[in-house]
Image (cartoon, rainbow, N blue to C red; front, side, top):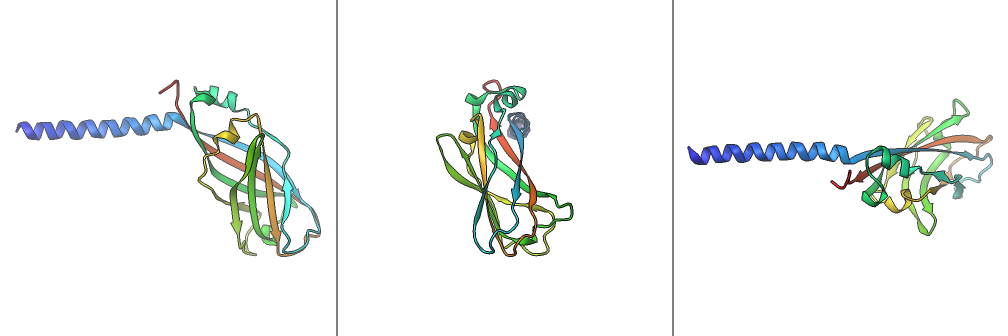
Length: 180
């Protein structure tokens, strides 16, 4: 009977520990969401890669970290959780003109890094496009005051008008909260 009690106690301890760790992980992880806008100009040659830079994006990470009871010295890693492109003008626009899109991140003193992409985009795609994302740690880019994105597109048809596209990037922060 003594071994059975020990096993039950051990099982309860492991279950409680696993539950507490999951709850602690939720406390030490949070998302940062940033928006940017680009214009894809009319007349881009077909099958020619074309770069579209974004204006610098202010991170406000110090404030975000403080709101989540941490600071940049306690950040363990930051990874891109999702990146979505959405056409805002023209209202009925679709991404059917794109064959390929790649998104690169850069910041002062850091090399440019490819963080999201989509290839062989079907003609049936609508006005929203979710990209595949890298699993790279982007902490060094996001703890900067600003970062920039560069969008590299390859089209399979010529646009007759400019397209305005909203970029929404969601980053998952894994941090130590108050040193925990």
